[in-house]
Amino acid sequence: MKNILITGGAGFIGSHLVKRFVHNYPDYNIYNIDNLTYAGSLKNVKEIENKKNYFFLKLDINNHKEILKLFKDKKISDVIHLAAESHVDRSIESSFEFAKTNVLGTLSLLEACKKSWNLTSQNNFFYHISTDEVYGSLGLEGSFNEKTKYDPNSPYSASKASSDHFVRAYNKTYGLPILISNCSNNYGPFQHNEKLIPNIINSLLKGRKIPIYGDGKNIRDWLFVDDHCDAIELIFTKGKNGETYNIGGGYEISNIDLAQLIIKIFDKIKLNPSGLSKNLIEFVNDRPGHDFRYSIDFSKIKNSLGWKPKTNFEEGILKTINYYLKSINH
Image (cartoon, rainbow, N blue to C red; front, side, top):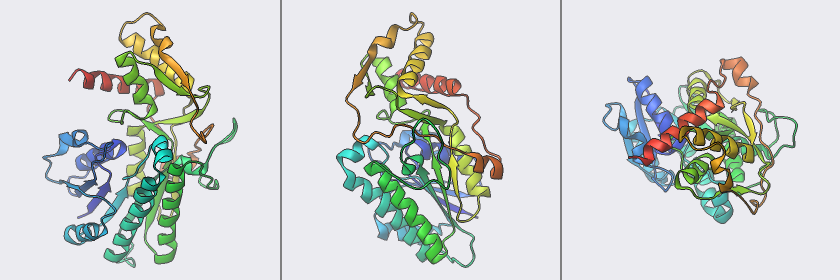
């Protein structure tokens, strides 16, 4: 019997993962802890709230005493760690909060694992979910792979880079069995409105201006959340101790082209005249230290575990728009 702790399970990626594990592993107990800050909501996991193998606790990962008690009382066997402050703009305004949650919160969990698990048995895993932003910024050529040197540029990516280093240090120093994955930009249903794609969609729904940083030419690699969860599940069940896996969507697009594509699909769904909503785009002052381009080489996970993204980008965007259309009508 496994007792799996998923942190941040009321957030965007976490809620998708928690629901998947509750459904796919009925013999495992799934413990979801989330501090329910602005980006987390129990509405995201409402469909599983009565499942017998699902348990929710409102808990701050920095509350080390309560985390230790949870490990002891529930005999936690594995951790999949997603709880994090994740919005770059917010990190620029309040970097201390990002360091507190992303670095010290991760340390709190690592210490609980070290104190609670028999590390000689190697039967447990601490799986740390991270970001491609730890690698810094690319020019027009090249992609990040697992050997790329860390070069974070924002307080957010610096905090995630630090937490990655601590996870590896616990593996090397104490023998804690760990897994790490670094993913590209996620999108899909249940994402908080502050992120780019939901912000564009919600601006279209409300007929308000769509803010695009700088000249809109910054490029991101987009990964549908279900494809990301496929990869997480595969790494958790088949990944090798101490390994890092990069997870990318294989779809790169500039922010301005992304906005125009979403507008095109949105206008088609709403039966608007073609290009009607284009005038809502508004270029605003660029973000400080704005990384130009991210691109993930995911050949390692493809070759070693057989994963690749399944969702066509336009298909994923259509699902995402329909989710927000449905939620605004309820």
